[in-house]
Length: 254
Image 1 (cartoon, rainbow, N blue to C red):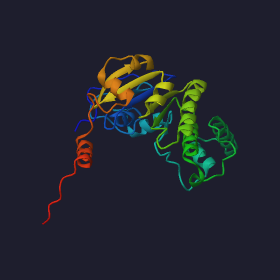
Image 2: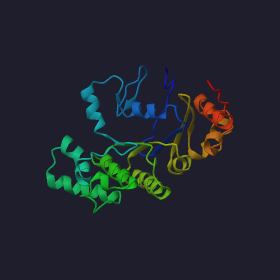
Image 3: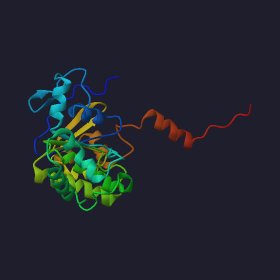
Image 4: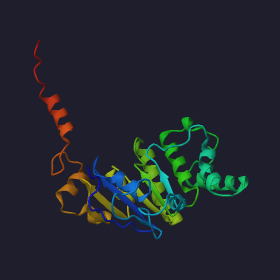
């Protein structure tokens, strides 16, 4: 089964690129490839002058120190408190002293609005706070690019708004490159400098938010407006499930 087919994209530097598309469109696979978590079966993935599809594992680990990742479910280490979670990559990948690391952690927590919560454990954090702590950890090594996998998933509207505002403001402040995968059309278009829209493993549109909004492609308009009717159908399993609910079959006694 082919997850991505003939995809060719460019991620603008020091800007926010938002990758959108329905479930199964290939956007998470694309994120895993460009972040070096997976390797493609064919083709190239260029980052900082190196092809991630061909370099050694050791070279890949070195390059990935220039990347940060905010996972969908935060992926904080449950046995470590907030400060220790953010300090973890600095202890692992640098020779900085504990006092310098403490200062860096404090700065990163200040950037995401969590200063004063250093001693809390992940289990004591709300969903929005956990996402912000994960964001601070991703920023710890001052990466060139930060990847976000569904950063607003499972959050209430206010917490989701805080996260999207942080992504936008810190991208501008730190001049980093942000790549955001999201289902949230409104949030995605509001923070994006560049949008990539996917369907069935292919890129069907790429450009500015205004160009995406103004597209006359029926698939794009259906996705943006969230309409059930249009060229993008429900999956067969979902359609059958709805048919069964609306038109229950009679039960036949044995």
